[in-house]
Figure (tube, rainbow, N blue to C red):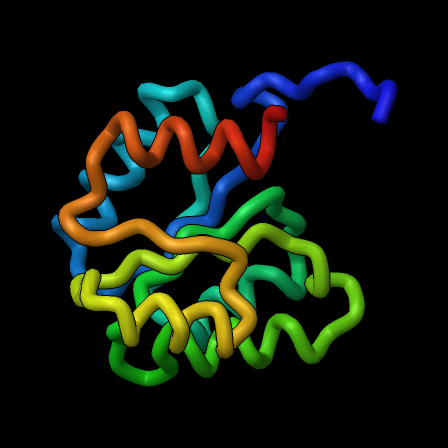
Length: 130
């Protein structure tokens, strides 16, 4: 389209990750990239947060207690306003079947753990800024 390109500072990314250290590291990378960041410890918490706030993308850990990434993504995609929201899976299992599972659940794309700064930068650039 003809719209002006967005800057990271105009975009809020929700990190949904149950591991506190991983959450901190991912949040740190996003802040370094200039994004605004919100965090949730599991899918249920993320869905609750989204009832009150809007975000531009979600980084979603697949393996979480309470509500995993696959269930969370399906719940999001069931709501019309989230049909086009970039939901980027973070998966510890980079073997091929996992990619299919992510896409089947409605994920937009995915990153393998451990999340690398440059891969995160490029992925978010593709989905949010380009």
